[in-house]
Image (cartoon, rainbow, N blue to C red):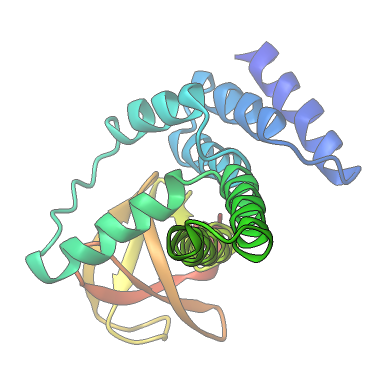
Length: 215
Protein backbone atom coordinates (compact mmCIF):
# COMPACT_ATOMS: atom_id res chain seq x y z
CA UNK A 1 0.00 0.00 0.00
CA UNK A 2 2.82 2.40 0.89
CA UNK A 3 4.57 1.88 -2.45
CA UNK A 4 1.34 2.56 -4.34
CA UNK A 5 0.74 5.75 -2.34
CA UNK A 6 4.26 6.92 -3.17
CA UNK A 7 3.68 6.15 -6.86
CA UNK A 8 0.45 8.16 -6.78
CA UNK A 9 2.28 11.15 -5.30
CA UNK A 10 5.00 10.87 -7.95
CA UNK A 11 2.49 10.74 -10.81
CA UNK A 12 0.58 13.70 -9.35
CA UNK A 13 3.79 15.70 -9.25
CA UNK A 14 4.28 15.05 -12.97
CA UNK A 15 0.73 16.24 -13.65
CA UNK A 16 1.33 19.39 -11.61
CA UNK A 17 4.43 19.97 -13.74
CA UNK A 18 2.09 20.07 -16.77
CA UNK A 19 3.11 16.67 -18.08
CA UNK A 20 0.13 14.85 -19.59
CA UNK A 21 0.01 11.57 -21.47
CA UNK A 22 -2.22 8.53 -21.80
CA UNK A 23 0.57 6.40 -20.32
CA UNK A 24 0.86 8.65 -17.25
CA UNK A 25 -2.90 8.59 -16.62
CA UNK A 26 -2.96 4.83 -17.20
CA UNK A 27 -0.18 4.21 -14.69
CA UNK A 28 -1.86 6.50 -12.17
CA UNK A 29 -5.09 4.57 -12.67
CA UNK A 30 -3.21 1.32 -12.03
CA UNK A 31 -1.70 2.71 -8.84
CA UNK A 32 -5.12 3.79 -7.57
CA UNK A 33 -6.63 0.43 -8.50
CA UNK A 34 -3.96 -1.46 -6.56
CA UNK A 35 -4.44 1.00 -3.69
CA UNK A 36 -8.15 0.02 -3.55
CA UNK A 37 -9.35 3.45 -4.70
CA UNK A 38 -11.72 2.33 -7.42
CA UNK A 39 -13.29 5.72 -8.19
CA UNK A 40 -9.94 7.41 -8.75
CA UNK A 41 -8.70 4.44 -10.78
CA UNK A 42 -11.66 4.67 -13.16
CA UNK A 43 -11.26 8.46 -13.37
CA UNK A 44 -7.68 8.19 -14.62
CA UNK A 45 -8.37 5.23 -16.89
CA UNK A 46 -11.06 7.41 -18.49
CA UNK A 47 -8.60 10.31 -18.80
CA UNK A 48 -6.12 7.94 -20.46
CA UNK A 49 -8.84 6.72 -22.81
CA UNK A 50 -9.59 10.30 -23.89
CA UNK A 51 -5.98 10.68 -25.04
CA UNK A 52 -5.67 7.21 -26.56
CA UNK A 53 -9.14 5.71 -27.14
CA UNK A 54 -7.90 2.73 -29.17
CA UNK A 55 -5.41 1.39 -26.60
CA UNK A 56 -6.38 -2.18 -25.70
CA UNK A 57 -4.71 -2.17 -22.26
CA UNK A 58 -6.60 0.96 -21.22
CA UNK A 59 -9.89 -0.48 -22.45
CA UNK A 60 -9.26 -3.80 -20.68
CA UNK A 61 -8.39 -2.25 -17.31
CA UNK A 62 -11.28 0.21 -17.55
CA UNK A 63 -13.73 -2.61 -18.25
CA UNK A 64 -12.28 -4.61 -15.33
CA UNK A 65 -12.58 -1.64 -12.98
CA UNK A 66 -16.18 -0.92 -14.00
CA UNK A 67 -17.08 -4.57 -13.34
CA UNK A 68 -16.20 -4.00 -9.67
CA UNK A 69 -18.43 -0.96 -9.13
CA UNK A 70 -21.47 -1.26 -6.87
CA UNK A 71 -23.93 0.66 -9.03
CA UNK A 72 -25.18 -1.31 -12.04
CA UNK A 73 -27.10 1.18 -14.15
CA UNK A 74 -29.41 -0.35 -16.74
CA UNK A 75 -29.75 1.69 -19.91
CA UNK A 76 -33.31 2.57 -20.91
CA UNK A 77 -34.34 1.87 -24.50
CA UNK A 78 -34.58 5.56 -25.40
CA UNK A 79 -31.01 6.12 -24.21
CA UNK A 80 -29.57 3.05 -25.97
CA UNK A 81 -28.89 4.89 -29.24
CA UNK A 82 -27.11 7.74 -27.44
CA UNK A 83 -24.95 5.36 -25.40
CA UNK A 84 -24.09 3.34 -28.53
CA UNK A 85 -23.15 6.53 -30.38
CA UNK A 86 -20.97 7.70 -27.49
CA UNK A 87 -19.16 4.36 -27.31
CA UNK A 88 -18.58 4.42 -31.08
CA UNK A 89 -17.17 7.96 -31.03
CA UNK A 90 -14.96 7.16 -28.03
CA UNK A 91 -13.31 4.28 -29.90
CA UNK A 92 -12.46 6.22 -33.05
CA UNK A 93 -8.85 7.22 -33.64
CA UNK A 94 -9.02 10.81 -34.88
CA UNK A 95 -5.44 10.79 -36.17
CA UNK A 96 -6.16 7.83 -38.43
CA UNK A 97 -9.34 9.50 -39.68
CA UNK A 98 -7.33 12.62 -40.54
CA UNK A 99 -4.83 10.55 -42.56
CA UNK A 100 -7.68 8.73 -44.31
CA UNK A 101 -9.30 12.04 -45.23
CA UNK A 102 -6.02 13.34 -46.67
CA UNK A 103 -5.42 10.13 -48.64
CA UNK A 104 -8.92 10.24 -50.10
CA UNK A 105 -8.38 13.88 -51.09
CA UNK A 106 -5.19 12.89 -52.91
CA UNK A 107 -7.04 10.17 -54.82
CA UNK A 108 -9.73 12.71 -55.72
CA UNK A 109 -7.06 15.08 -57.06
CA UNK A 110 -5.45 12.27 -59.09
CA UNK A 111 -8.69 11.24 -60.76
CA UNK A 112 -9.64 14.84 -61.41
CA UNK A 113 -6.27 15.28 -63.13
CA UNK A 114 -6.96 12.22 -65.26
CA UNK A 115 -10.34 13.71 -66.13
CA UNK A 116 -8.70 16.94 -67.30
CA UNK A 117 -5.83 15.49 -69.30
CA UNK A 118 -7.29 12.35 -70.88
CA UNK A 119 -10.08 12.24 -73.42
CA UNK A 120 -11.20 8.68 -72.65
CA UNK A 121 -13.05 7.37 -69.58
CA UNK A 122 -13.96 10.92 -68.53
CA UNK A 123 -17.25 9.81 -67.01
CA UNK A 124 -15.50 7.20 -64.87
CA UNK A 125 -12.85 9.67 -63.72
CA UNK A 126 -15.35 12.35 -62.70
CA UNK A 127 -17.53 9.81 -60.84
CA UNK A 128 -14.50 8.52 -58.93
CA UNK A 129 -13.44 12.10 -58.19
CA UNK A 130 -16.84 12.87 -56.69
CA UNK A 131 -16.86 9.63 -54.67
CA UNK A 132 -13.42 10.30 -53.18
CA UNK A 133 -14.31 13.92 -52.39
CA UNK A 134 -17.49 12.87 -50.60
CA UNK A 135 -15.81 10.08 -48.62
CA UNK A 136 -12.97 12.43 -47.70
CA UNK A 137 -15.48 14.96 -46.36
CA UNK A 138 -17.30 12.23 -44.44
CA UNK A 139 -14.05 11.00 -42.85
CA UNK A 140 -13.11 14.57 -41.97
CA UNK A 141 -16.55 15.30 -40.49
CA UNK A 142 -16.64 12.11 -38.42
CA UNK A 143 -13.12 12.87 -37.19
CA UNK A 144 -14.14 16.35 -36.04
CA UNK A 145 -17.23 14.95 -34.32
CA UNK A 146 -15.19 12.24 -32.57
CA UNK A 147 -12.52 14.73 -31.49
CA UNK A 148 -15.12 17.12 -30.11
CA UNK A 149 -16.83 14.28 -28.24
CA UNK A 150 -13.60 12.85 -26.82
CA UNK A 151 -12.39 16.25 -25.61
CA UNK A 152 -15.72 17.28 -24.09
CA UNK A 153 -15.67 17.79 -20.32
CA UNK A 154 -19.28 16.84 -19.67
CA UNK A 155 -18.73 13.48 -17.95
CA UNK A 156 -17.55 12.80 -14.43
CA UNK A 157 -16.76 9.91 -12.10
CA UNK A 158 -18.03 9.53 -8.56
CA UNK A 159 -14.84 9.44 -6.48
CA UNK A 160 -16.44 9.53 -3.03
CA UNK A 161 -17.17 6.15 -1.44
CA UNK A 162 -20.84 7.12 -1.35
CA UNK A 163 -22.69 10.19 -2.59
CA UNK A 164 -26.27 11.27 -1.95
CA UNK A 165 -28.29 12.29 -5.00
CA UNK A 166 -30.92 14.86 -4.09
CA UNK A 167 -33.91 16.46 -5.79
CA UNK A 168 -32.60 20.01 -5.27
CA UNK A 169 -29.19 21.74 -5.03
CA UNK A 170 -29.58 22.31 -1.29
CA UNK A 171 -27.81 20.77 1.74
CA UNK A 172 -31.10 19.71 3.33
CA UNK A 173 -32.79 18.50 0.13
CA UNK A 174 -34.53 15.13 -0.05
CA UNK A 175 -32.27 12.22 -0.99
CA UNK A 176 -33.55 10.40 -4.08
CA UNK A 177 -30.93 7.64 -4.08
CA UNK A 178 -27.21 7.10 -3.52
CA UNK A 179 -24.31 6.57 -5.89
CA UNK A 180 -21.03 4.84 -5.13
CA UNK A 181 -17.46 5.31 -6.27
CA UNK A 182 -16.66 4.55 -9.87
CA UNK A 183 -20.06 5.38 -11.35
CA UNK A 184 -19.90 7.50 -14.49
CA UNK A 185 -22.36 10.39 -14.81
CA UNK A 186 -23.12 13.08 -17.36
CA UNK A 187 -22.72 16.63 -16.05
CA UNK A 188 -25.66 18.88 -16.93
CA UNK A 189 -25.51 21.98 -14.73
CA UNK A 190 -23.72 23.55 -11.75
CA UNK A 191 -25.40 25.56 -9.00
CA UNK A 192 -23.22 26.71 -6.11
CA UNK A 193 -21.53 23.57 -4.75
CA UNK A 194 -23.92 21.14 -6.42
CA UNK A 195 -23.83 19.44 -9.82
CA UNK A 196 -26.88 18.20 -11.71
CA UNK A 197 -26.01 14.79 -13.19
CA UNK A 198 -27.73 12.23 -15.39
CA UNK A 199 -27.23 8.47 -15.35
CA UNK A 200 -27.31 6.16 -18.38
CA UNK A 201 -30.90 5.23 -17.53
CA UNK A 202 -32.00 8.87 -17.76
CA UNK A 203 -32.35 9.45 -14.01
CA UNK A 204 -31.24 12.91 -12.88
CA UNK A 205 -30.34 14.44 -9.53
CA UNK A 206 -27.99 16.76 -7.68
CA UNK A 207 -24.70 15.70 -6.08
CA UNK A 208 -22.17 17.66 -4.07
CA UNK A 209 -19.38 18.93 -6.29
CA UNK A 210 -16.59 17.46 -4.15
CA UNK A 211 -18.03 13.94 -4.56
CA UNK A 212 -17.31 13.74 -8.30
CA UNK A 213 -14.43 14.65 -10.60
CA UNK A 214 -14.63 15.70 -14.24
CA UNK A 215 -12.94 13.32 -16.67
